[in-house]
Amino acid sequence: VARRTADDLAEGRAALDDPHLTTLGLLVEAQAGLAAALLPTLEDGHGLSGQRFEVLLRLVRSPDQRLRMTDLAAQTTLSASGLTRVVDRLVAQGLVRREPCPTDRRGWFAVLTAEGEARILAAVPEHVAEIRAALARALSPEQVEELTALVRRLRDSVSPDAARVTPPHG
Amino acid sequence: VARRTADDLAEGRAALDDPHLTTLGLLVEAQAGLAAALLPTLEDGHGLSGQRFEVLLRLVRSPDQRLRMTDLAAQTTLSASGLTRVVDRLVAQGLVRREPCPTDRRGWFAVLTAEGEARILAAVPEHVAEIRAALARALSPEQVEELTALVRRLRDSVSPDAARVTPPHG
DNA sequence: AAAGATTGAATAATCAATCTTT
DNA sequence: AAAGATTGATTATTCAATCTTT
Image 1 (cartoon, rainbow over the protein chains, first blue to last red):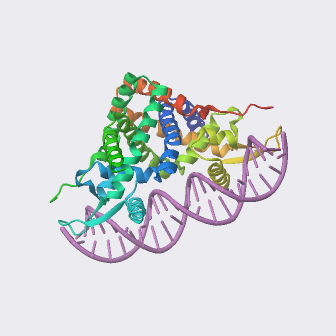
Image 2 (image 1 turned 90 degrees about the vertical axis):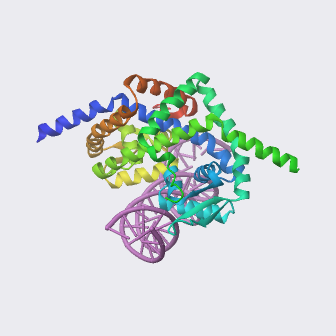
Image 3 (image 1 turned 120 degrees about the vertical axis):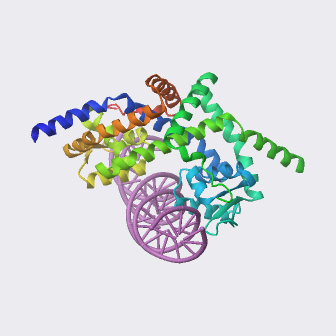
């Protein structure tokens, strides 16, 4: 048994140097750094948290600027209940309204209001400029494209539901 | 004024299609997907949240398996107060202890206990195997290396403090 | 029985304020 | 006055349970 434990520790120590652990760590740190650089502008300049921005962005890009709650949850980093609360706050701010789904009475749409559309369209240009600047500081345009292609493959593999939408008359 | 507003909306709509926005979105989604794939094993199998894992991993790799609270906060995705709470929980679990800094009486070290070392070394091999599997499902080994190099440049640019350590006798 | 959505209870994260030491 | 660290108060997120509809 002591033998087994000693082996386990040695195995753990060897794994500490595995380059895959570094890859994941770099991804986490890069994204944390980007968030620290980008979120204050959204928050202070446009009154939007990262989550509220994410939800409004999904809606403004969707047909009729609306999406089922379940689809919105699948497309964002939020759980179903977490999404309910975020939409509650957006409704309270007048940026989103809820509408019942005509073909499935269990379902609800979150729908962008005119005010919500104005808010997200006002926020995006500065946000995009900051993303562009942050990427340009680190990488050439070609490298940004490479990175995008690689991350897209990874995203498609680990979260294939990111583009999920319930079909009408589903 | 109506003119100006119409221009603003048009500018916002144009920015919606900017590829840099897509790049960031893919990064966020990829990492959310990886977290969803990796965290349950840490949590259910080893009793470690992502944050507690991150802290223990930093400590086990540091000289004397110890780090100043401020450095630990800079190296993780946590604020100073957030780190205090995480270390509180790790101390309560017996995985970390606090020691005062002998050369600066304001400072404290978080120090890995023997139990903490055993816990993190037990968790790492399975975690690494899962990272490797997730990456291999999406990318070739060469692509993983490319991705790592690009993300490293990005990390170095956006969060240069990720390797911060207060020098002894500072 | 299962899916869509919400709610209550519990957990965790942050900001601002505070205390001590430099 | 500024840095290191912690605490109180607030806000946000999740899990499990619930309700309605399919």
